[in-house]
Length: 139
Image (cartoon, rainbow, N blue to C red; front, side, top):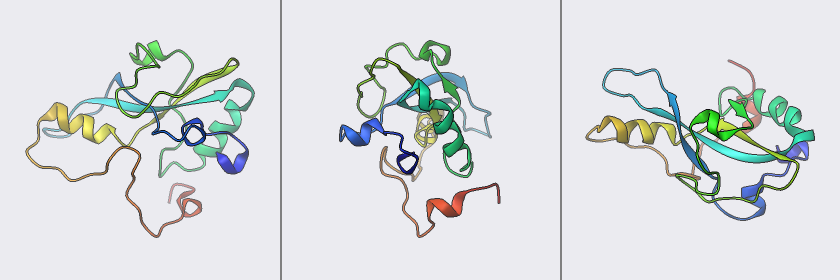
């Protein structure tokens, strides 16, 4: 999004991205089950379509947002109190835009009470030699 001229607020404010538990159930697999976690980025209404376009081009990572607008539709009560990460400023004329979040597996693991799991920490993704540009498309 930065390359498309869209501010990424948590980077600007030098905090961790805000993440929220939702009421959206995941499809379970064996003993693993839970609800989706989403990250939120406030985007000026005039740039939402561009943010969707840019991120939809990378379905192998976060992909397109799953929701734009009213957080209550996702079961989120208060954007100023994220379940993970830090709150960010939402300015007049901006909409909250929500993406599936890599913390979802941790949430499902906690809800499923599995004995051992190895994963990433919020805001600190697994680092590889694969470039974002190489993640475009479905293949």
